[in-house]
Length: 306
Ligand SMILES: [Zn+2]
Image (cartoon, rainbow, N blue to C red):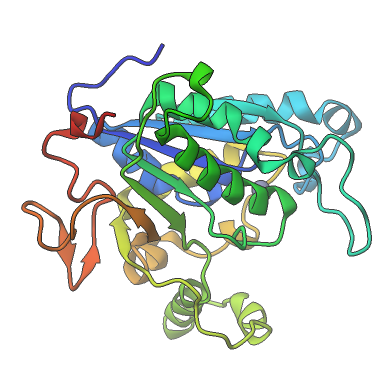
């Protein structure tokens, strides 16, 4: 099903909803895809319970057929990023209020082991050396994002063992599992300061003032230089027209300032089977920080089979 690129490097990024791949780590995906890495996005749900966040798209016919509209948006974003994409077929859980139960049959209400099965099959079919997903908080408290983390961790584990789901394909051991560190306080702070210093009005001050003064839970282990792909990232985001309002929120800050003050997307290496990354030959590191998701994996990419 999947044609193999010559160097055999494969990257799988698992997301909760269509649009998440474009708002978290999209420039990284575009960079690796442009390099010839085989990049696949797995989208757990169809985003059926999402809101229409762009007034220009908030029309009755769009709201009435949101699942189809979002599939079309996803197809456009995938083309722009130059990646492949699969829906895993779960139903969006929506964002229930504090005392509201999860809707019946939604993704976050599924047992983790059961919900992991389609991803186990996909991992065994695609055989990625590197997988990216959210940390255990989900990055933000949407039940589908937390569930995406749980399901990805469970699927990476189950995919490697011959005893689990033998009907879902030959076992495959993922070598590295990363968590996104996108949209961190430090990122907002750097952009806010960069804009303020240049006399550009910043709307991020209010957000930062209300941000709890806690240190980041996860260390940055990896920074991927991808400023050249910010324009591709932005085009992919705008392709999710129901979810993004041009010129507002994330789309508001000047891109030249972003390229200058924060030209990377950042990750936490949560699990690795690569022996002592810093000592391995050919490993890309700068000041103890990895600069390549495939660090330690570029020689003999197929060696991780089994
Ligand atoms: Zn989402």
